[in-house]
Amino acid sequence: MAKKIPMLPLSQDSRDALIQAITRSPEPQLAKSLATMLAASHAATEAQVTPVLEELATSGVLKKYTPGKGKPKYWDRDLQELTRDAVLRAIQESTSPLTAKVVAAKIAPPKVAEADVSTILDSAVAGQRCFIVPSSKAGGKPSYWHTDLRVISRDAIRKAALEADEPFTAKDLADRVQAPAKLSEADVIPVLDELVATNAIHSIPPKTAKAKPQYWMHDVLELGRRIVVQTIDTKGPQTLVYLRRVLKSFSDSQFEEIVSTLLARDSLFARPPLGSVKQELFGTRPPSAAAYLVDVGQQLTKVIGLLKAARVPTDELRRNVLLLVEAAGISFGASGGPSNVPEIRPAVVAETVDLVGVIKRIEPGAERGALVGARELRRAVHLPKPEFDHAVLELARQGQLSLHRHDYATSLTQEERDELVTDGDGTFYVGMALRPR
Image 1 (tube, rainbow, N blue to C red):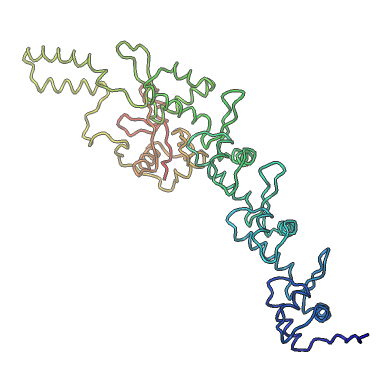
Image 2 (image 1 turned 180 degrees about the vertical axis):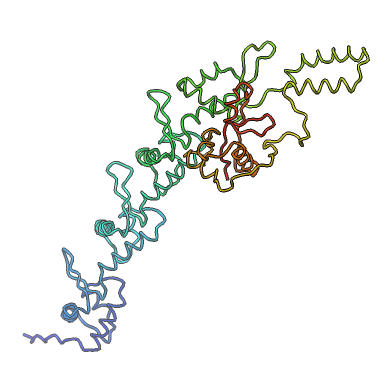
């Protein structure tokens, strides 16, 4: 029987060649695989390589990875650390949330199990190195991302809510919000409730018991005002009775406030009965004067003809006609024509009073165009009437204020007219609003 030849240990050159084979490997290797990687000049068996690998692993030069089944593998790198870095890098570089399964598919080599990736990501979430995104499907797996989707979604919801040009439901907003992940109605409602609580937007009650609440940056009264204007723009001037039916979901006091505010803003104009129309109509533009002056013009033409026939001088006729018109309330002064902001007579203005600042202080909705009454503002600044009127008119001339004229100032008492802003030429303003910049 032949005598068994003892196994010789690896030479130093072979050991060095083994280490080089390990450092070039992209993943951990079995001892048998490493033995086959050696060149012919350093040929060795698995049995010769294994003790060297164990020695290097014990001394910390190599890492030893022992699976649940099978032989151990060896590598010069920390596989757990590299895997963790690769997982987090995939999350950081992604433009949208990823599931653990998708992340695992992006990492190679070495291949990583989905469960291991989930463990790494859950640990990163606990350390706030990434954020979890719950699945929108019942029982679905979560996704992960480098940014807290709740913050992004909240900002997107706020932006969409504040920029909406008409009332919307929570579902409407969820469908239109641009966010990295699709939002549900339930995602949107808490943010809307926060905005309502801070008066950034308003909750508008549903029209019916089955309808859902609506939200808007304007309150329910502004909604009513817009409905009135849209109705008139679509169907023409209407009676108050008809407009009340259009706003049937509003209370009587709300309807009265809607109409009075539109009148004060010059967004609604009363049209006296004319011809066969026996009721007062309301339109979004003043009535045409010509239609109301037809009968007067015919009578005046007839009378002027008679007076001319009686040889009444033309200058006298002209002068009396002008006096008649001025007596009716039309002035023929030397102004340069109609203007939205009248010429201001010289006055001493208290420049130290910040009217714009006071308006913002006494009216929270001022920057959104809410009307401030002349009486309320005058009492807040404590200015004498001439100085107050001059200051308001000057801000209007500069384009900072929009003035709202009283259409029936002659129906007021002198005391009531004194509470308003006047240009001194017969025009009175009940309030003002800040112009958007």
